[in-house]
Amino acid sequence: MPSVLGFLLSALAISFAADGDFTSRVDRVLADTPLVDGHNDLPEQIRDRSNGSLVAIDLRSDTSRILSTNDGTPLMTDIPRLRAGRVGGQFWSVFVPTELKGSEAVQATLEQIDLVKRMTAKYPADFQMAYTAADVRQIHRSGKIASLIGIEGGHQINNSLSTLRQMYDLGARYMTLTHSRNTEWADSATDAPVHHGLTEFGKELAHEMNRLGMLIDLSHVSPEAMKAVLAISEAPVIFSHSSARAIVDHPRNVPDDVLRLVAQNGGVVMVNFYPGYISEARNHWLADRAAEQSRFNSPPFSGLYIGQPERAKAALAAWEKGHPKPVVTLQQVADHIDHIRKVAGVDHVGIGSDFDGIEDWPQGLEGVDRYPALLAELMRRGWTDEDVAKVAGSNVLRVLAAAEQVAARLRVTRAASEAALKSEHHP
Image (spheres, rainbow, N blue to C red):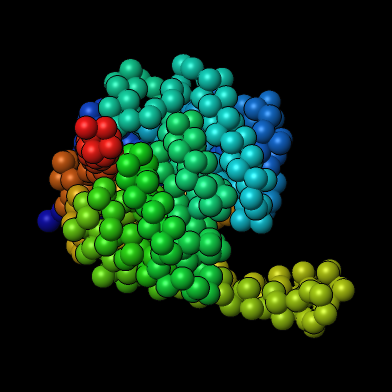
């Protein structure tokens, strides 16, 4: 009879061989299919750190030793890790805070778009701007990483369709309808509902985005607004960085009834890696921690240790020691992908990490080099290479191409309508 040690060694050998097979399969998939992440906030990190200067952060070096300016989190993105992660295309978020209003928000967005283009131009051996699905595939074949632009909040256009059109012309290929607060025409998932969906202007804006070929991004919006858009959009929509609400009951996640509507629409939900959206235990821990923090120090006039920041800090540290932060793993991210596949179908799920926009990450997904490990986990669960290719990038590229086709059709229809109207007035 074989010894226990021999059995364990044999099992380990089989495990290593299986992992090697998954690695080879992932390599083959990503050689043919661009891995496209729906949301990365590196431009905001560069803006916050150096007011948009590209000198402070050298993306050709390891940036994990650089701490973000707002919370001390190590940066998660650089070119060596993008290459290790086999990234073929990246939607760079050009987010500006919701506190910025009107023309100030518009200017800051234009500066962020300029930053993405300057960043891409600074590293021409690695990055190239992309504006269509075909661009992404061509750039991937050339061995470079396609840079795409996504606007993360409707407040950034100052209620102006003209501004929206100009931002599309500058390269923006999606816009998230809201961020953390309502706009004047759509409700946010994390604000008290006012419009209960979309206003008439919100509907007009959705139609204009269809006409342009700009993807409507429903991350951050309320379920009522999600349904309102899905009822009228002629093009598939995206959720650039959201997860499954059936697994974690967080308002930033997508309910199952909406997932089914996304399948009917032909859209894609790109799963977010933020631990609070991935783990119910972490979601509750974060809420409890926020409550304790407020109890100790709630400016301007309340809190046990108001005006005593060191005591408040020590009290929070003591609470954290007694309430360890729940661990969140790569496997739990895969659970969300599996769930969306089960409800909406494999053609309607993708990856939207939110790297460099989050202050923590799941174990195993520490940076942009870790995407292959996530795809290998899906293979362990029985996913075929074809299905892994869909979640990696084929789904979102199909959606982008479909939006382009809808825009082309709507332009022809509009031109025909204008010609008919002109002939009526000039017989």
